[in-house]
Length: 181
Ligand SMILES: [Zn+2]
Image (cartoon, rainbow, N blue to C red; front, side):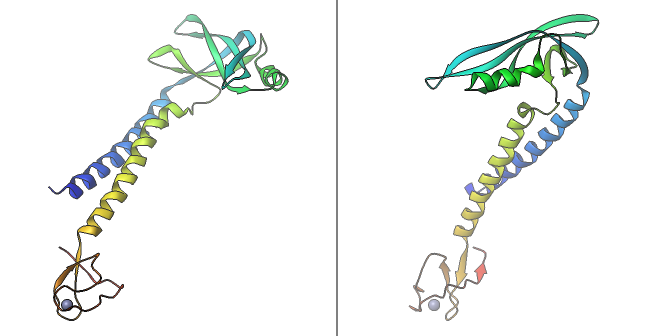
């Protein structure tokens, strides 16, 4: 196989397996069971990112799964550089309040808060689909550079990038009549 063909096959495989994986992940997410979790601990924790202080809510969630009580720490995904804004954001996770968690049926310590959708399910498949599209475009470019076309005067096969026909010296037009190599 030519490199361009190998590249095209790789691109197609990446694209198709990315789609399959995304479909599989969607099916997996459907199996995650919702449960009510109670906030048993809630505190604003300052941390430094890029030399600046930011604030993030750290919680402890308590929920029941498989007849067992779990107390699991959870960091609120959003952080804020303003302490007041972060405090306001943390109001919905006051101690004693409840929130919905979605539990991994294979591991009750693995959970998502409030929503089943999480980038972790889509990061890898989206990356594979993206790589497939990029490699596919490169292989299309390679295929077109491999192609040749015929001189309109003497019908000699000339490479695409040539401006003059090497056989008869005719200046070649921009409009290209494609022929396969
Ligand atoms: Zn010619």
